[in-house]
Length: 305
Image 1: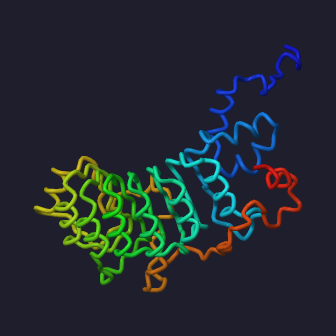
Image 2: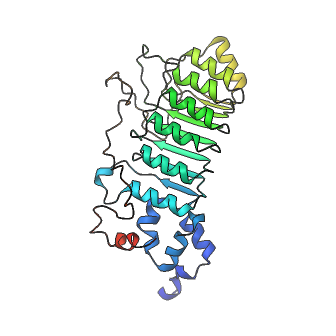
Image 3: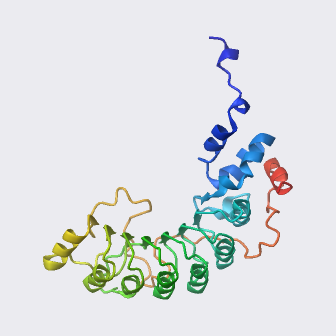
């Protein structure tokens, strides 16, 4: 077979097929690369239907990037034109960014925040008030307290999936049921709950079982203050279809599951999570990417609305 016969012109694909392929890319890949391939792809990438889901997944090495994830996220939210249903923000989230998202995404159903230490209780609580249709929420390795969880529970009555993950610790004297009680008292419609590395005790677990009667999945891995046995374990087994116990395998857990017991006992910032240089809170000029002079792709992106 000749080389010419083996060559395919991607521009000849139907537009809906091309859109389906591009939609499988993350937001960073679309804004940084795919939309700059040709005018046809750029037009497809500007369609609001491409931005119903925004995945800003990254490795957290913000200091080593030639582009500003926060500004890219703002632009992606603008492109959704109010139709955003699902967004993932990792390492660069701030109160201002979360406010921008919530004000322009009233029908948001799924929100994922990972290692966003510049999001405060107050910022998350204010955003939750504007997200009454939120159904799924993940808060992993962030500095969020029971106060914000209570606000979320009161503001988001449709919430059925909640992940609140911390770094596991075997210091048994570090016990707290604050988050567990907040969940039990304000999130009665939960079906799925993940509390990886939480400091809750049997008391907190019992409160969750009482307050969340519809639970089908409960992940208690590395919750070392929970001691399942007797009537408590029997109740969990009878009630929960899929129960992950404190010492169950973590092979399918997305994040680093190593136990860090040598760090500080101050767990406002979980040990083992590296400090991240976060970006400026000023996003008035978010169409202008910093340090992009050596990236020709950005010259086009900055001038393209």
